[in-house]
Length: 406
Image 1 (spheres, rainbow, N blue to C red):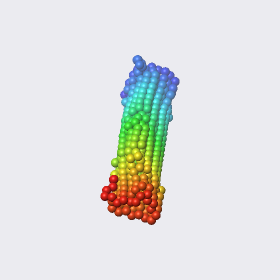
Image 2: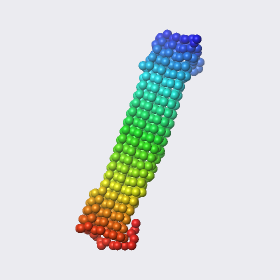
Image 3: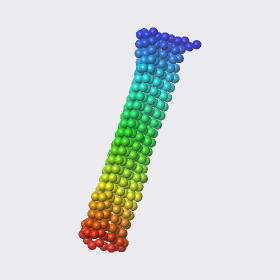
Image 4: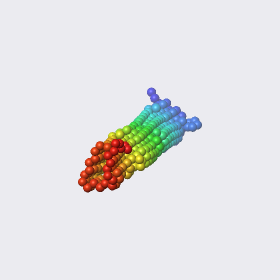
């Protein structure tokens, strides 16, 4: 039968080893022996609350009704349970299972299978846990290796992370590293390069450095201070990539800005404006407003409702410009359709159509159709057929040629 040691309330005692359980009364102080002082309990430590251990403590379990302070390492082989209070450990802490109602503070490293804290969890060292569940806030100073983190409020990890699943109701900030799945209700920020599988954030996301991931879904804005390799981006507001982007497809409700080049294997669909400092290439490009790039290339089609501004032109199988649109830079495509009253420069194509009232500089095509009241300020060269509507203004007489410079 295990022996039991009791410590009276509001007393101070010095202990070395307890063969069984240890019961500490309210507001008692327990000291250990040796240098540094240690206390070994073979059974369970029961604390009535407001207890201070001025030593390293090891035990099978720790159960407390109110606050407990450990001024040293805490090594619990099985379970820690603190009801209606907080636990402060000024050293390293290890336990299989940790359940604290209010708050847990660890000044060095924390190692456990499962940690459940109702309020806040703060670790000034490293954390290595399979499952972390915090109702309020989580803060970790050094590296974090966790299978799953679920935080109701906010999270701040100021060093490298290795996390499989991150779920945060409010805001999350990490140094960088690897997170497989990110689900944040408010905002997410990584201050160094990040590798991820999915990002699902209701508000804003900000990444830094060279980043690599798969699916990105953001309700508000998404910014990368660096480069990004990805498969899918779906953002309701604005996307900013200060470096280059390389990925599959992008769907943005508002604006897309890229400081370098943008290379896509799939579709680009932007409701508002696209600004790419270098070349943009994709399978399809659809922009509701403005497209600006050094060069725009699509395997299939380019459709722009407003204007295109390029230095080296727009190349695709099919190019369509909306009514009253404007294009600066050449258009080269098998099929070109210019909307009513649009203004364009040079067009090179097989099938070219200018709708009523459009303006162009030079046209070079195989089959060219120009509707009424269009204006051509330069020349028209065609190889097969030219159809002119009424009241078309021509600066020069059209020429039928054997080949066009396409």
